[in-house]
Length: 338
Image 1 (tube, rainbow, N blue to C red):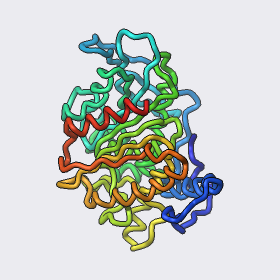
Image 2: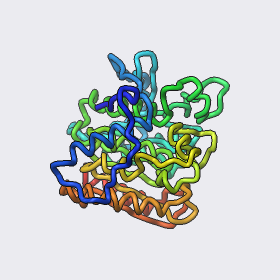
Image 3: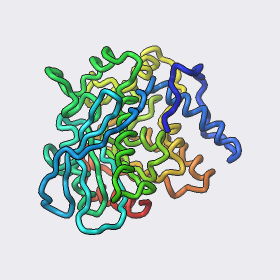
């Protein structure tokens, strides 16, 4: 489930050319090499906890079709993470689970839970009302995890405190543990797990879909620009202090060639169903059109695996907003694949 440590391998800086024809029999070896390269870019991942110790901390009176609970689990042996869990009321049948990754908001998990921030991004609440079990947690440096007397998303301080980790890698590790929480719930079908995010949440959702085979469907809105065309690779565009991938920053500053790009991460997700959503105007990302190249290139891998329809790219001109029309696209994707 967890990729190997970046320090346990010799890094290959030669980018795998996905535009060339790759035979089905060769794909496992090619995929393994891409995993190594992506893992090296991420840095070490924290060791998973010996025991998640999943607990329900508080229960709240249901005001809709789903009950809301504040839960806790260990993302590492010495690190308790809290989250908002929604479980549909009524039916006793197993339901799909969706991890809702929050975007660039100081409210962290409270925004997808519909407690703070933009109600259009209350994704955990939205999908719970549609019959899914949903979970939202704070990524490191956000929400309750911002730290005392620190501003939210202080990526530079995070990397000073954790020199062998990347913020993106730590978030990935935490989200893997969040997915495992669904397996602790009797009401959730562990074979039907999805992930969704907008902006920074989409960035995290795509990494999870690419590196965690338990994810069966992903919706990612406005989540990336290809490293090769990004003016500040490894840094979130809404905050120059939010360094997600220090190694990408180093490569970009040196004018070097990236060993992997987003088409490689998308290819690792195959055959998981991935819906990419991109705004072509006033977008969060500096070069949203580069997403088209990444999707088209990764699409060759999906086609080779017989899953061509499982990767889709929807574009709009909605700017930085997640509109009702775009949300309908996401709704239909999860209905189809979960």
